[in-house]
Length: 279
Ligand code: C2E
Ligand code: CA
Ligand code: CA
Ligand code: CA
Image (cartoon, rainbow, N blue to C red):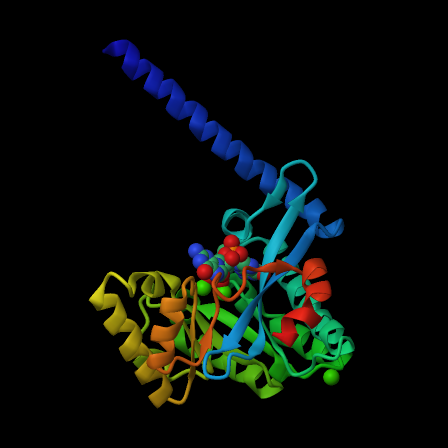
């Protein structure tokens, strides 16, 4: 009926405006959030599948908003991307990663790696290389302990530019991983032209392994090919013992996912560490 159509139209409008208002609110509040240090990292463990040992963590950002509570990065990163705030937040993340490494070392845990996500605008920021050089000089930690995660989309944009930036950061000692591999438009042939150290297979393929023989084949052949190309391979989103043992059979190097550990806020991680390490 006409009425129902009218209602739907109103609902649609209200839905839109709530979303738009949330977007505007996030865009606005993010500036204060940076000044007031409302961002934190949650750290998610990565283990060597062969030995079961902890190799490091991926740093995943969380925003503790004074009114809205925790806001997840999938909501605010896309809003911030291409803004000055994204660059500022990226710098915060790198500094934080160095200080986490220093803190871990003070707890007697040295030699672990922290993987930090870099969005396209951070990666293309002309000041990035100088900033990284500066932070490295200020820190006692080595660049080899920081892994920079780039998505396929970021690295396929412009091969020459991508290569140039990556080689400069590699020369400083940083390492690179390709995030969410399999969801974008790159191939291992393309990525092997770049100084990539690690390929992270997207969690949708890991989730699909049990029910889809195609996904299982994709994971298996990706693992084999990545290893042949001299890179390491991380499986993301490992949620079950079955997945972990399948990955082990395939000789996948590293696993990350809820089955191993959920991301843990820094303040919760440090007290938990000694007992975790005893396992
Ligand atoms: P991502 O880089 O692919 O990070 C992995 C996401 O998968 C994280 O979501 C993590 O909490 C989640 N995850 C980990 N294990 C499992 C699992 O076993 N099952 C399932 N279903 N999910 C799992 P999160 O923390 O919400 O982050 C979402 C995305 O936001 C990240 O995806 C990344 O693209 C972006 N992001 C997070 N932190 C940063 C940051 O500091 N900078 C930038 N530029 N982006 C970030
Ligand atoms: Ca990532
Ligand atoms: Ca140094
Ligand atoms: Ca990922």
